[in-house]
Image 1: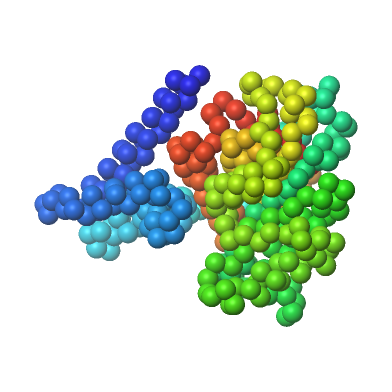
Image 2: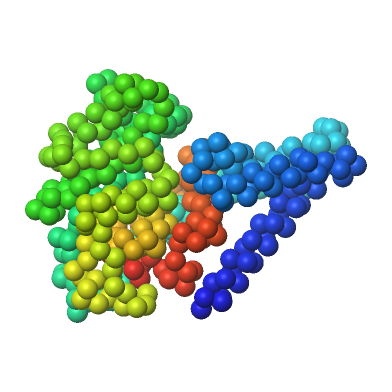
Length: 374
């Protein structure tokens, strides 16, 4: 199985290498023999894998990965099509770009992709019930009494983003984004269910920019939101790792080790649920449902046993019960569907990146086989 896993990674690397070679040949004229420019691009790509914590490398990687996104692919194809001027535009490339834009902006396509991804949450729920029916308590009583920490994954409080094209706030007294506020409220609700275990609450949405004095108001706002919902102040940690799952995983492992709460689960195989696993300390992981699969497996890969509590479900249940007009409306492209498709595609690319780096278990291990769910 290790050989199969290694071959899979190798094929992915070869595929990425071929794609990059094709891009370089398109953008770098062979007449000028711009080996230096190509070497710089390849060096940046290598650095993105060797030094993923470096923010500068991360920014360059976003530019390099831009053509792989739906919107980036459309813009890249249109730019290539117009390379010889508007009168001599490449019609095939324009057609492909148009098709990508139409399909990625259709609510029908966006819902299908999101439903496929988020349905894994329900499948994991049923799988968990089957795999440990002789060990775990009732389905709504997953052993969260062993939860020593709650990790809330969120965008940094000072991150630039547009919510529905207009930056909104719940009220003038709260500087936090509504999405983050909702996630913090969900974390407080989970804490109330397992408050007897006195778990720590780590929020990764701490601000990144400005001086310590400038960042403090946002950090305090995050704390106050949790405290107002019943979470003790001394149990709250606000970190600035944001949506960087890898950095959050390493931080949590180090923190639990310092607190002498890190107990790697004893597991001889992906389906082994021994009694030692039942008694292992757990981390309740709260992240968007689209991100949960990668996040949960990344934690489990580091030996941190996870109870998944997905947030922000975008899937639409009971689609078959919708009337004909509503179904026809799903064929009309709109910007919200494009955003949703882009999020799904971005998460897929991130999962491939994590797999290539060895931060995820072998592809034969599914998250619903190793992660418990609330």
